[in-house]
Length: 158
Picture 1: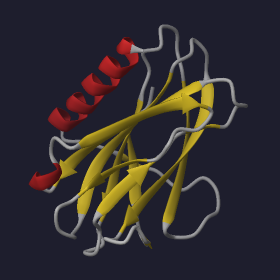
Picture 2: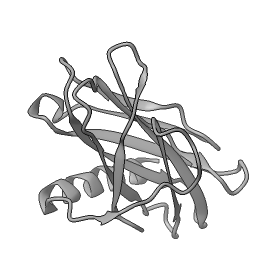
Picture 3: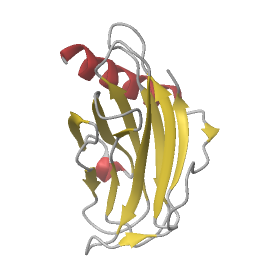
């Protein structure tokens, strides 16, 4: 588990230092505009692979940016999700982490005052095999109500 957390932290820092040069990701399945569903495949030997997403909430009412991770290949893998604030400056250094078999609890970062927000979301699996996953990413207002228009870009695909 320590290797996975360390790999995720290194991946996030690497992306931040590299300026997050992305490919645009599309929602993989239907859902309301307020919830962006992204999907991917992850896993390699040694528990050291991670997908890193850049998530943007451009809505001026945004107070929270949240994500989860769901194993879509059965319910036998432990999924790990980490969120780290990128912008504005008030969210840099804020983060959250969760892990669970099958689907993680939702992780969120919160701004002091509403406004646009950017974060990186890292998703990993603690298994020596390949697994498919999906993740709901959302922007929320001060009352926790979903806001439309989150976007996600896959920065690192491992």
